[in-house]
View 1 (cartoon, rainbow, N blue to C red):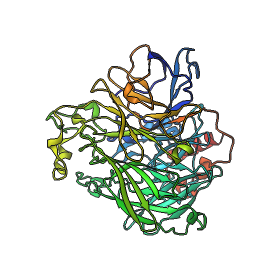
View 2: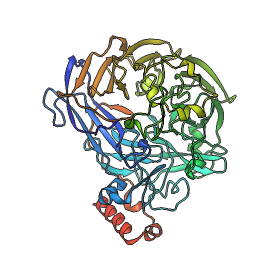
View 3: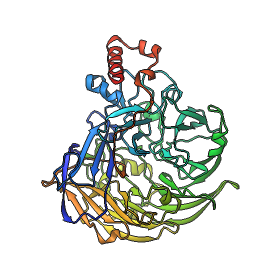
View 4: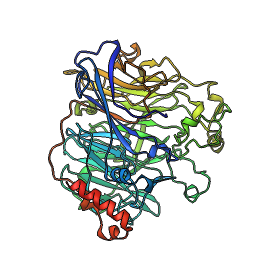
Length: 550
């Protein structure tokens, strides 16, 4: 957790690279920063691992792992005036407004590359250089910030997981806007070029957490309240956090044809139902002819609003390891998955499958086949569980949740992580691999399809970075049988620690971004708000705008 991002050349240290494996794995990461009280708010970086040896400057027998902190407008301001950035409860306070950290997830968009965050617009970067190109859509077309337009840099509550519509050819995401009922979601559509997005409010809808994910079928958008990070007004005002997450959350369905037939700005009708427990990530089957089928990865009693703080004591009665301070509280219960069939005609939800296990604490991230064929008929779903982590559970938080947790179910020591493959439809375990050491922290897996193979997620490979104090490595598994263990392991010649990383994707190749009409940062700036800055802050902002305009 205290390591630094770095460029590495990875060599095969065991097994052999499978024939046919290719492409690039792209990973998002927040840069650890001692000024922040919560490390999920660090500046965003992208890490790219080439599965083809000898590329991007690596020796012929090595695989290039390259990173870059995304040089967004606000990061360029930071490089000019780091003293103007001050850590606060919700990230950095700056004279210009809310930084867009773009640090959570990469998204491939027709060969282009986006970086996303729950509290900012998607950011487009060049897939080869990983350099900043543009934020998606002028802030004017987004309606300014989620809490009103008061600063040159708006705070836009969005989704870390937009979706690309493979038939319509555009990107769907959301914006959350403060309302009397909570945060009202607006559907956002980006056609792929031009400086603007189009937006529609969902009438009567409200979330109390975030909308970390949205999902889609051929005809519907599926949008759930994540529920695992709720704002605490008392904490915001300087008090102690006491808010707890809900046991169920609303799920909203919006028909795509209704969006097509509604002028931007006019309200959309939705169909609402509730599911539980809360969920961070969920995935819909593209074919909705027999109902809307959704796989929910639940975050049972995982409250990301509680971070580890100085003075915290862990579940074993020991002071929390100082290197974990500022990271999120880990799961207070074992994690579950479920598959649901949502019926718009009756506004009803039917749970069709459920998976639970006492050794499945801390469901982290997952891999699946993102091809249209794979989304239409998914067969395998690969999930990382990091295991019970008592050292990252604060007694302070457990006391607040005392009436909702079963501490007798906790093991007396930390568990080893596992990679588990579930079959879609019934969520039976088809294969499972247990990591050898309890200090191995596998991160975000990606599925790489076998060329010419059968779509669905079982014919190809699962590529998985593993963080460890023994040294960073990347393990490659046969997606049909992860229980065999890695068929190949990549690592530097000399053991090297790598820091906390988040979501990953696989791209079949990377090429430079196309030359398209996009939002320009200078077009983002409101003259009156820029004029309200002091001379120094205004000068720096205009310098960055001029630099980005070329």
